[in-house]
Amino acid sequence: MLRKNDTPGKLIIVEGIDGSGKSTQIDLLYKWLRAQGHSVYFSEWNSSALVKSTTKRAKKRKSFTPTTFSLLQCTDFADRWENRILPLLKAGVIVLADRYAYTAFGRDVARGVDRVWVRNLYSFAMQPDVALFFRVPLDIAIQRITSARASLKYYEAGMDLKLSESRIESFELFQARILDEYDRMVDEFGLTVIDGTLTVQAQQRLMREIVKQELKGWKGLPIPEGTPEILRQPEHE
Image (cartoon, rainbow, N blue to C red; front, side):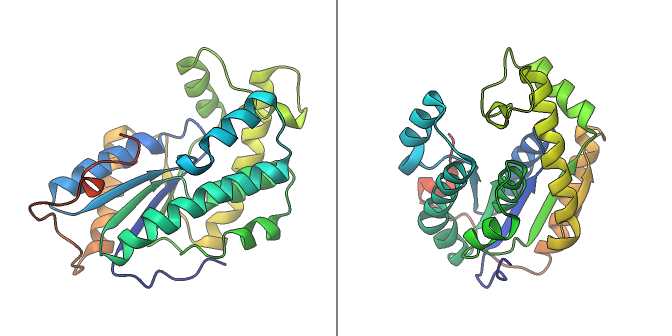
């Protein structure tokens, strides 16, 4: 079980299968919160420089097992947690995360890794103040992804699981497993479900209302003159 956030900052995260629209929504939220005068930091899944080269080599060689993949992803998360996310939360910053530990709880278990074991790996992390799960029917998510990309990558499509020789079919079967895990987590972790089939504008209105309620009466770190650049730009920029 993730521990309660006991820092002055706020942790807001989005989750969902590929094609759920969560990345668009958190980007809009980031810009809106900045416009409101809040110090905001953005972090995305699998973006730590510490393990980037190792991950790239292993994917190219197709040498990952489900367990080694899980451990490397957790190492990536732990590096970002200790060096970026936690220090900024302690400073009173709003941290936005496009995918959080729940992504591992979904993907790793879908690959056959033990559910309890994966949760214990991330026991150092804190429970988000707001955790939004953008839920869309599987067929809509698949259509969004396949129409936007020329091809699916090996691990992205779950080809390592030998579910199908077709990448598209394998991707669909893999995402279905992940979606099942997310549905289990709604009650387990108190995820707030957002209907990902609503318009972008409608989803953003819902998201902002939820965040407004969370920030009501809260005073975090404002954006003063001379704010370090780390607080002014998302991690991936």
